[in-house]
Image (cartoon, rainbow, N blue to C red; front, side):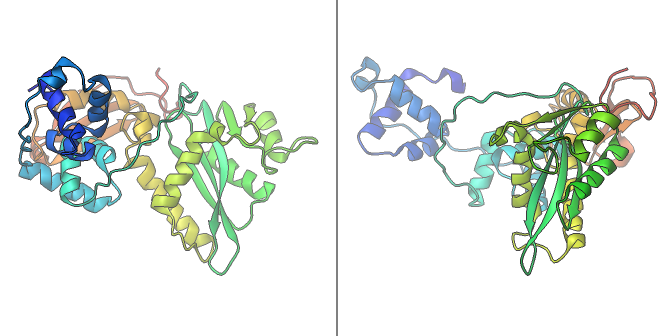
Amino acid sequence: MNRTQLPGELKAVVCQQIRRGKWSVEQAADITTFTVGSIKRWLRDLPASSPEAAAAPPVIQPVEPRPLDPGLRRILDEALERVPLLRQRSLVDYVRRHYACKVPRRTAAAYLKELGLVERTTVKVKQPMRRFEAPTPLDLVQVDIVYVPKIGGGWLYSVNCLDDHSRMLLGATALEEQTGEAVLRAFRAIVARWGRPNRVLTDRGTQFVHWRGKTAFQKYVQNELKAEHIRAAAKHPQTLGKLERFHSSLRQEGLDPKGYADVNALQGALDRYLGYYNHERPHQGIGGVVPADRFYGMANPLEEVWRKLAGWGPDRAVFLTMNLLGRRFVLAGPSPDQLQVLWDDKLPVINPTHRPGKQS
């Protein structure tokens, strides 16, 4: 039955059972396979005095879930073994991105529930937030410092630089001290590797700005890079929201909460997480692709591939995305000797110093 065409009589049955105290909203969601939010909406939209509710039959049969395909289960097991923190939406995105395999969210939820990894939480309604996003890679980068505990007392620091358009982490440099000179040296190295950004967004830390005169960081950005330096409003971390969100993920997924003995140990942890974050971890804010996909202009080719692979099963053995100097394509197939070029944008080879993501 089409979920969007569920008869009002059946909705009324669910509401009636809840109002009689026979089911809780959560039990109704499990039995009907609809979400808690849908059940609450039915209760709101279908008053107890309505004709549908009055004429509703007293019982409803639970919907039996379909058994999980063995090949799909193997992929889900492998994904969860590789990244144990994956949950419903992130698991769906991960399998789609790295296996080119579409998994319905309800299937992923049932799989996680079977493993005892699903906990019901109360969703708080958030006020709408003003959103912005740079139009191209390196148009705007965000720079900030995160504090990391040092074993034995004190702090270590990481200077992080994030591309606003793609969420690509351009650099994470561990420091013993967060002086203006050390922070500028770390940022110079990032620019030397990736190229000049058009705009640089920072908070109002003393490493970046000063109320009297200009800091060395400001002089470098404005005089040497000829870029615009944007300062976030005081006490307004939302301006650096993408980087703040990265810091939250970094603490949860990439750093030891006990801290690190020295700057070398911290740098090793940062380097490992940088590779995972940029090339393996799907990002919900950019449609479930990884940041490197968007930075190198691979998001649209991948969308095209996913549409073409709609009929493929979960047993495909090879799935490889490539961007070679602007020529972008995807190889996939059931075995190494049966590969197909599934998408190729036919772009000519471009200058290797051409800015990533910018079309010729």
